[in-house]
Every structure is written in structure tokens, then in C-alpha cells.
Length: 449
Image (cartoon, rainbow, N blue to C red):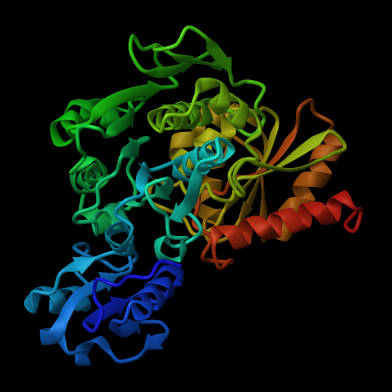
């Protein structure tokens, strides 16, 4: 745990008491601060209306709380009225551990895989490394690191809105596609939030931009404008004259004579993962890791749970857990590498549904629909893909497995890639993915016929 001493003997407000909020309270109290906390769902020490606002030195806001759109939460309005600075836990980590190196990763999709892969490479190379942020462990629950250590942090747009002085030694922008527009107002607001990752970078810093979508291509020069560091371009779609790119599954670093095949790394399947690998490669090189060490570490990468996770191969059928795919764009990355897919999808739908996935429909052997999105998704699939109203995940897994076994198609895949949030039937995408893994294990050991 990080001990935050900046506010010793001072009054601080913490709003939002999820994992990150609880870690923040513990870190501040360990440093001698007097903490006032509240969560709209689970209460706290004192309702925020009754906090001593005139005496508060800062409001530490959970990234899930609206800062500006669709309208500021009342606690944010109170902070503004009383001229109380509003920051997040990432900012507190940076202030508490200023000597460490900071690698930040943002983007609409691919953040978790890239963050985990970079952390794996650095740890394999013997670097003291802590991995967290939006992924897994809250920032202030990480271990303290000094100048020889590196924090590898996945950063959401919400978290980036709450950093004020944080400087990233290595900053990565993977991609930008429409998401969270209700919280940022429009695409311009969303893009602006992502761009915070490059702000305040010094001359020794490195900015890494994957220029494979229309937004990031247009952002590259702007990124140079707000960062004094070196900008490195990476791509899994284009051959670059300078930078790191992947062509036909082979990674090229234009500063090196050798090339590095990625096709055989089963935990990094598909072009989207090749983009993640190129970004991770650039980050590791920026951290001084030799190319041979990076490539060897990539080959031993165990993969990310709930993101194209190979759960089991049963009777020649691969069962893939991609529960983390909570929107259509993420699901497109899951559909692209496979054929003969028995696709389990649905949940709490997001704007746009699955209409953008029609190019992948010929790959679908059958679709199994669950959750609130069943009706909407059935309309999109009608006449294009055969589907079953499964309603629940346990029914969908059994139906998909039985059909895949019976039809015996080559390279068949039972794929959970919902293109939806999980909150209609599950606590989180992790809960949904864990249930899928449990159901597959039951099939594997013949507990379900």
C-alpha cells in the first residue's frame, strides 16, 4: 500500500468507495489525513453535504463519478463552489512516489492486454514493476517503488480527466473509437480526455501512438505538439518507414535488422493483438529492454483473463472466454481470428448494438443470445445468421457445446464475446467470464452432458 503523507493533519474528501476509493481512504489515513468519505450506494463517514468544505484541501473523486457530463455530480459542484481541487488516485500515486518511472496506457480497446504484456516483459527483464490502475489493483494499493521501479498503469478516460501534475515517462495511445460519449459530451471531449496522457511529458519521455484508426492518425501531430518527448508510431495495418509495425504476423522494428514472428504466440491472436504487441515492444524498448529479452517474454506471455482466453479444447472444439468485450468494436477483434464460430453474445446493450459486425457474420456457425439485448440482436441477425434465444449463459454454453460437438466443423470455436455490458445478469465482466470458465470445466469433466 502507498502511504500518502501530503495531507498529514489536513482534511480530505473521498467520494466513491469501490476498491479504488477504499484504497485511497486507507492511504490517506496512513499518512495522517483526516478523511471524510461517502458513496451514494454504501454511505461512508459523513454525507458529503455535511463535510467541512471550507477546510477541505482536496476532493479525491472516483473515476466512475460524473465530472462534467451528462452533468457534474453534486459533490463536484460543491467542490467547485468551495474552490476545492478535484483529483484522482493516479495523481495521488504520482505525488507520493515521484522518483519511480511511469508507463501509462490508454485507448478504447486493448488497454488491459497491453498493460499486462508490458508488465510481463519488464518483470521478465528483472525490473521492479507494479501493474494496476484501471486494470485490477487500484493505484494506491500498489507497492511503493523508488527510482529503480516502474509503475505500469492502465488508464481510462475518466482517470485521465483527474490527473493534474502527473508526467508519464512512456505514454501510449492505442486507439480511439466512440465510447463513453455520455460522460464526455461528444467525440471531441472523449478524444481530449485521452490526450491528457501526453501532457507535461519532458524531453526524455516517449509517446507511443498506434495510428490504425481515423482518430489516432489525425492525432499524431497534435500529440507531438503537447509532448516534448519523442513520438513513436506503431501499426498493425500499415508498413512504416520509421517505428514498429506488424505485417503478415511479423513484427518489424525499423531501428533493428531482425524481425520477430508473432503468429505462433497463441496468447496474442489476431491483428488487434499485434497492435498491442507493437505498442508493448515500443514501450519496453523505451524502458531500455533488449529486443531478444522482449521477444522471449512475449513468447511466455500467459495472456489476459477474460480477453480471448483459451479456457479448454474439448473434442477438438476451442472454448474462448472474451467476456471483457463489452462493445461491438472489442468483439470485432474476437471474431476476426476465427472461423466456424458458435457465438455467445448479449447482455446489457450499448449504443449501436452489433450492426457494425456484419462483415464477420459469414464466420458464424450459430449465435446464442442472452440477456437484455436478445431482441435487438435477433433483429440484426435475422436472415443473416442462425440464432437461438438462450436467455442465460449456462443454457447458451450447453447449447453451443452440443451443437459444435454434433456438427464437427473444422477449427470450431465456442466464443463468449458478448458485445455488451454484464450488469443485467452479472456483477461484472469478470463474474460473467468466471461463470463461463466454470461451465466449460463442467463440460470438460463430463458433469454436463
